[in-house]
Image 1 (spheres, rainbow, N blue to C red):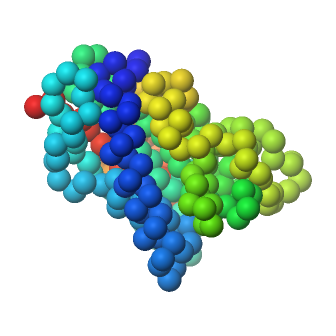
Image 2 (cartoon, rainbow, N blue to C red; image 1 turned 180 degrees about the vertical axis):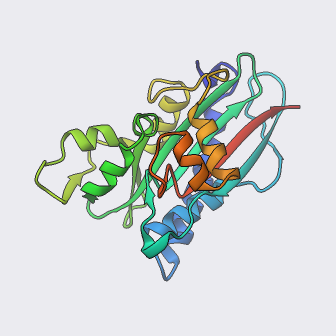
Length: 238
């Protein structure tokens, strides 16, 4: 499965990177430049809010339609648990159809280092299909660079007896080659459009149903959410 069988990777980056750079500029200038604000700026930049022409196809023309769903609720005494900050699903009306999802935890880097909390790694690992698709996205406040690493790699190197740990991001992948690698399925598992109980079906259940009714069906804790928000992006053939 490779997104770039049907789409031009250079055209994609030409459209994507300016959106991310503008989001980071606005976030950096804001009064509340924390990780929650970072997520909101990035998800807002990627959410078109309506179908728009997206001329990145190798053959034919496509519309891009996105929907941003807020999955979380405020549980009793703030007891909700989250596998990630933002889930992103990309689908395309191609033959065969392309379906793939990633889960991101956002971190602010200082001098190429981020502070990781053990409980965030444990929450990402609650559901295996979330864990194997989970990534940490670190933004350096000073130079606005974005680097990405798998949660599984971070967890594997995390000290067993620590609740927090400082991790260097120098060897993490910059976001533009990460995007290419992820969409070409060299990074992270892809999803089958015909698979029962897919990760996308799980996200849809949380988006359109009450969480307490969803969790038992999927053998998840009642106060667990796979992500705080879910951005669903669909490329539609015109």
